[in-house]
Image (tube, rainbow, N blue to C red; front, side):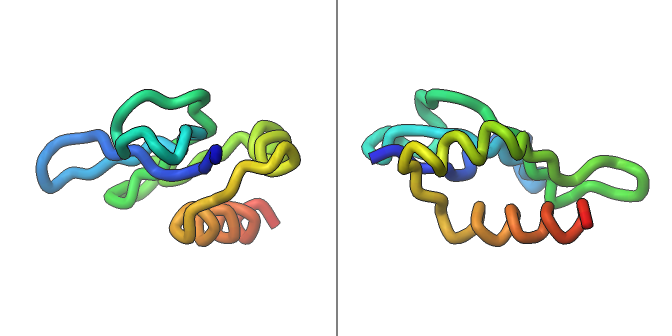
Length: 83
C-alpha cells in the first residue's frame, strides 16, 4: 500500500518534516517515491510553515494512496490558509 506521511529531518529539538509518498513497509525516514511538500512546526514570523503541492496530492489520492492522520490534519490546515 502507498501512504502519504511525514518524514522527519532537521536537528535535535528543531524538527522539520517532509510530506512524502512512500510504500507503507519502508521505514519512516527511508526511501520514498515523491516529495509533496514540507511542514516546519517551528516556523517563526514570516517563514513559511507549510507547503503542499495540491495537484500532486490530488493525483496520489486519486490512484489510491492513503494519508496518515497527521497529514490529513495538515491538508485541512493548508486548505483553510488558502481560503
